[in-house]
Image (cartoon, rainbow, N blue to C red; front, side, top):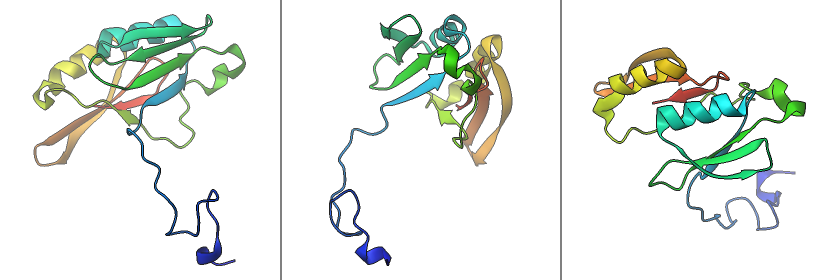
Length: 139
């Protein structure tokens, strides 16, 4: 069957399907080894606020003034997945002021780990840091 005859999600032929309108990426769900340790990291380093909890092992956090959510899940049956990315290299936080990168790195190093830093292009600085479970975060 060629690409032109493949039906995608019942919306028509490829190239003819309706685009799903979204508000952009809204959340990421992370398996963690210690809910308390991870909660403390994201609150202290990124100023995230707890929105609500689902049971005793899952908490939903939000960056004040944004529509993002990070879900932290300490599920004992899935703890071996904590810190593993399953093909996702990293996720990122955009700094409100890019010139604050050095201060942000200092803050992360108190609770996490700096992996590397550099320039994507002249004047476009970055840092890759790790949270307590080893998830890689780009600043």
